[in-house]
Length: 497
Image (cartoon, rainbow, N blue to C red; front, side, top):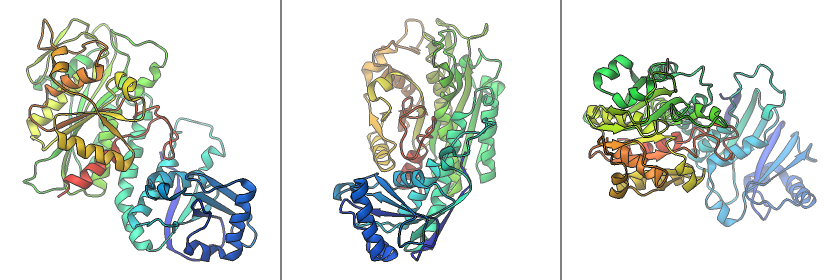
């Protein structure tokens, strides 16, 4: 959940109190606007303090001067932007996170006039988004909170910019994306006793306040549709499964929708093929794909995206009770294809199989992208730096790669071919849900491909990036909200009318 920091935008002018944050390159020289703000004494102060602190102005470095002589502010914070190469490729969202990490007072003013870097209103908006993401924390269940928790609390951050009105307008279009990431983080961080399939579906239902049409399928409706693969996973839990269908109609009535599908296993014990006990508490995050889709739909509806979008999430709990499915069972999917259960811990692909088929059959989308914390194998291949990308469409894969580079939510294309499809053949059914440890991510994707027909499709395996991933300037928690910014950028750049 976000804190109570208030963000404002104002024109360049004299700053009289609070923290003053400015930027320099490796030559330690501020921009002309900042030099004017500081005056000769302030510029000289930076040089002297840098010599004393061995501050070189390198990228992401910072130096603080308390009660700076000759200035009326309480603290001067100088942030380094590095050399020419660093300044040519600034990630403004990450820069916003860096700024937020340096703010510890009730009032701070950031002079966004950067040496040799153009700061457009959109860049200012991205910086503001980074601030909000950095200051996120999930503490609703802590009855005792530290007074100095990350320096959070009520406060005001002012961005001093060339065009405050334009910056404010740009931020309004980005604010929904920021909130979408926070919604996704909140969902992943929730404890599993609080967030079951029904409760998760209710969170999706709340999007109706933004004009999203939401339809919830319960066990009875799914049984009628023939979703035997999803229901097979759900049958081991006393909490029934759900599918939530979210629709944002912002494009032309004649336009085909674009579709996003999320795996929502609210808790994954592994079922009868039970997981080891150590670390099992992290399996509350096995619904991060579904969380991303809900956050994305919030982002798109908030800025009234000019596109028709379908978001679909399959919500189940994978438990090992006396009614749970067994290795050796065969389930019939909505498509009519049958799957032999080899390992009940390979459950996410069963959930996605039915939801993917439902979406492509009912909505005939322009393309589909699914997100799932699907395999540990993808972490062996890509660690926690990239999400695995599998696709039957080169153009869609390339656009996802470009959006990943732009947002820092990077993807890496992995192989998907007939060899992997052959590996999931079963002696007793049309396919089996696990082909063993070799090529585990690719064989899982091969199974999913059997449920998309000829629709352009991409599968993102986010097991390494959605939870417990390496911390950075905009995420200091456990759940990252990975995918919301990536897919929002994809829609914004390529698919809005």
